[in-house]
Image (tube, rainbow, N blue to C red; front, side, top):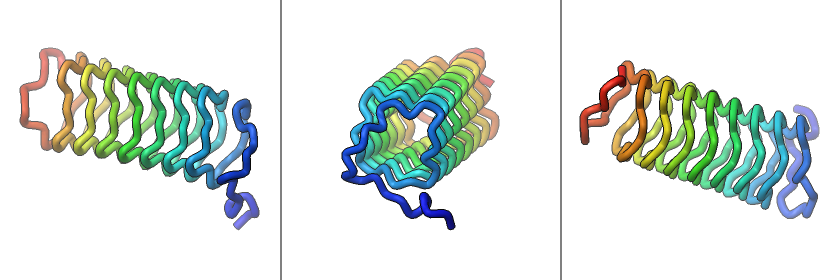
Length: 180
């Protein structure tokens, strides 16, 4: 195990606001205020960002694979093309977030708030959306193959050309025309 895996920045008071392409893999950034941070392309795989404030942050192309983002606030964040594979986003707030083309394969979005989120073309295979709120979300062309949709709210969501093959446990209303 290298030293940074055990490193913590909780309460460090550091300015991480401009760490474009930086490497923070496995670090503990729990609860840090990173409002409007510029972390484009940053390596945050396996990092602990529980409860972090990432509102309006630029996180395009960042690697959050297997990161802990439970209860993080990502309101209005730009996560275009980000890698969130197997990330824990349970209870996270992603209101109006841009996740266009993001990879969220096998991520946990249970109880997450994705109202008005842009998920066009996102890879959402085997994602846990149990109890998530996707009201007015844009899911055009998204791949939701095998996703768990138990109790998820898709009111007003655009699922045109979305792939819902083997997506399960959503019985509250029929899928709109154009949904596979």
